[in-house]
Length: 199
Image 1 (tube, helix red, strand yellow):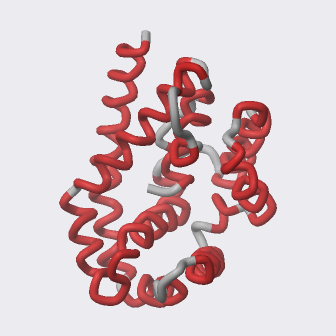
Image 2 (cartoon, one colour; image 1 turned 90 degrees about the vertical axis):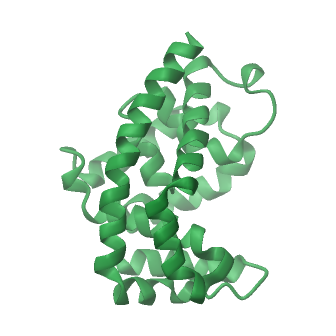
């Protein structure tokens, strides 16, 4: 899953959200770097990614993409799913997406001192271009995919991913809706386990 989903799946627990958000940017001994609830968020991030990678509905969605996008199908699927989460946000949260995204940026800014250095540059652009809101628009994901395609070493064809999404919108949305219900329940249960394990 991508940034918006990881934020949402922290279930309004601020320190957990910080950890869940930066999970891809941290390495080494977490216990000497972060406080307990941030570590819980990092561990939750990894559990979410592992669960997502193995889920049969996600694999089916990726199979749809593989003939065109090959190895980049998993990255594109993650972006598609954040698109659907943002697009249908009111189904998942009573808080307006605009207000929610502002609160996420504000929270992360308040924890800037512990944010990994590798995260700071993407975070700068994330705020300036409001990625979390932009995920829910075709123009926003077109901008994201074009930027990602430019940065890849190989011909990823990711700049064509928004057109593919438009052409297969209903079927991919169906995969998202069914999978995300499973992921919400998994994440709630896993977060409880992690809190219990971490004391």
